[in-house]
Amino acid sequence: MKLNGKFLALAAIPATLVAMPVLAQASLGMLRTLDNGAWELRFRDGSPTQKICVRSGRELIQIRHKRAGCNRFVVEDGKNQVTVQYTCKGDGYGRTNIRKETGSLVQIDSQGIEGGRPFQFSAEARRTGGC
Image: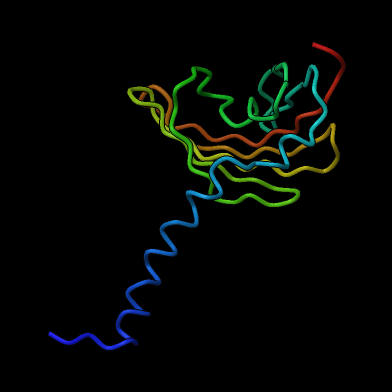
């Protein structure tokens, strides 16, 4: 069977598209630009505020799934916004979008399943001091 050059070029496109997300997995550079320290989350639905110690910014991704070992997939890795989808074996999954306003103020939208139950929240996170 003879293959022409056009077919080979078209066949290479999906391989390129599959490789691109893998290259972006380690970055999340925007999160590294956030100020380290104590942050307070204020939920838009009026739920009680939550405090979190931010060291790398990645702590803001899994607000409802605290344990380590969840698999993450970077959906968007922009200068001022990131979106990460994650799966925690046996505990559910989530998708979180974090939009940076300043180094000490971000907007967070997250939804998913935790312990077999759906969740969704929008929150403002603001640095309040040291950890």
